[in-house]
Amino acid sequence: MLNFKQLRAFHEVAKADSVTAAARKLNVSQPAVSLQIKALEKECDLKLWNRVHGRPVLTPAGVRLLGYTERIFALAIEAEREMELLRKSAGQLVVISTTKLIAAYYLPTAIGAFRALHSDVNVQLDIGGNTWAIERVRSGASDLGIVVNPGSRSFVRYPIYTDPLVIIVPTTHRVALDPDAELDFEQEVLILREPGSRTRALAEEALRASGRRIGQILELADAEAVKRAVRAGIGISIITEQAVQEEIEAGNLVGRPFLDGSTTMSIELIYRKDREKTRGIEHFLEAFRGDTTEVV
Image (cartoon, rainbow, N blue to C red; front, side, top):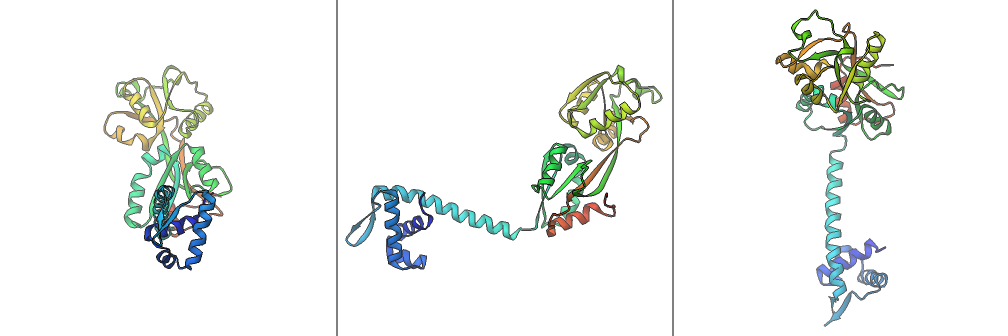
């Protein structure tokens, strides 16, 4: 493995075309620079310099090596600058793990308002499944999580949103035309998110608890695909009210209470109890947890 100090000595001599000038820049003696270069030549088992009229002149091998050292030290300077930027912004980046549904329908307005108050704090959203987002917080990869049902005593937990589940149907469906019409889930195509979705889990648990039987299920990857399929008349769905509010208000879909209307999705802000809180995290917690009480 080539030695960084030896490469630095070689690089400075090559750029200055002088051992004396290189030693001055490196703040070491001339013999020390010469020893570093001799050690590098020994390591490479190649002659890197010739002396012509008392001055060092690069050999072909030395010219090739100089091309590499120029790239190495350019990257070193870039790395130093990047680390300096990170030092200056320490405490000003908040990394939050969450789900696609929460990021799309619950966070944009709130994060926009937060950034208006704290423009010096950068918010990074890492998006994945609910279980993945919880594990990111548990492992320390994320500062905070905004998730559903974290279910762990190792977290500090604050409920920040509670949203009821609703049934959505196309505008031509008989339930859309007659609000008093009964809905037989066994006779409907029920369009749901993939297994692992918390919305789906809540809906299926509530249906089982009520004794309802489910007929055909169509699985789709995200809420937008679910809504498009319902609009196309393929089936009906159960979704959080916030996720479909725009379509209901625009008259593109019709929403009805799901069962007795008591099935809700509780979204929580979580962080590890032993998490060191930077100024950016403190600002975010103050803004998002508001007057809510910690879940114990």
